[in-house]
Image (cartoon, rainbow, N blue to C red; front, side, top):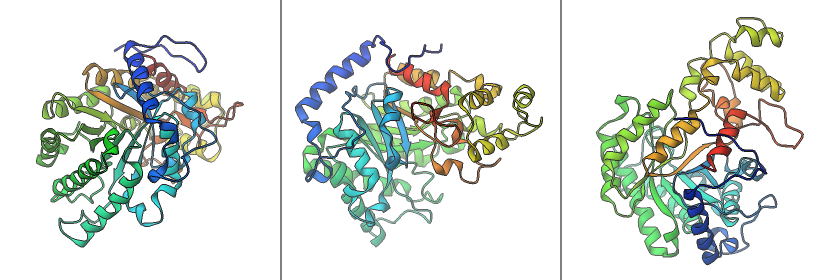
Length: 409
């Protein structure tokens, strides 16, 4: 599909009928619910953040939001405003409920601040068991459910969407024997909790994300059962997926697999998506000779080394732009975000898709030829580009322009 024209903050852009409907409906809902007075855990001081200002999020109908991944605590509302984002997504490791009061943790406070100020919010619940998932009825399962209850007490009725699981098929130590049983139990606990508290009806429940569906080996009886559980459960709104792919056509395979296996009234999320697999395949390529000569870099220097140098000493914005746009594997895919989001929207079944907002420290640690290059996927480049005069981080300008444009299409 064609690329969408871009818009910058402050420009007046005609809103689509889809977005106008979402804005008006959400505005009425926020007014009725008194969102600004919400507080974590259902009591105490209202969640707030000095850097937030009220927004009006559209309904979850074909929305493109910003993903901060595990970095909820570093959510920057200036960055969200700069790209006109109205929806925010992150994930929470449920094991963190052991540490202290969930509502008081910095990441959760940022999420509640966003919700209180009108942002649409999606929270993925991560159950990280590298040695295998707890067995039903075991003491470990009891602990997992107790942790879940602590988190649900804070988020239910506050966040718009909760996904049961983050990347479950990657967070079970590759031990799949009881993956369906574990997540079906957790999902039912979440459903029962929402029904019990009543006020939690605002929060839609999705099953957490399926990965690598472009690979036939990742479509298994376990993933079939996963979607069958979604389809048969009237309390589940749909399923999430994470199309981290090498092409738009690979992203299409997620739709081809998921949509026939869920109900017609259910929707999908794509709370993470990127071309990271394509980029990783080019990390050992030599940088283009023109870029090398322009900046006095030895010809033949591999892409990963230039990226590593940017992490060590952030580039000026123009040098980062030149680096990426001189590489055909990056520049020739400038329409990826629009193309994939529009494929998802065209189905009429997309609730929310989310694109990476900003580089995080884990992306840059020990960067080398075998590191997934998430630094190329993020909109804001906190760790590879010098800050602008406006105080914001540098950008992957291709992605920031695409993201802004898609807010108004």
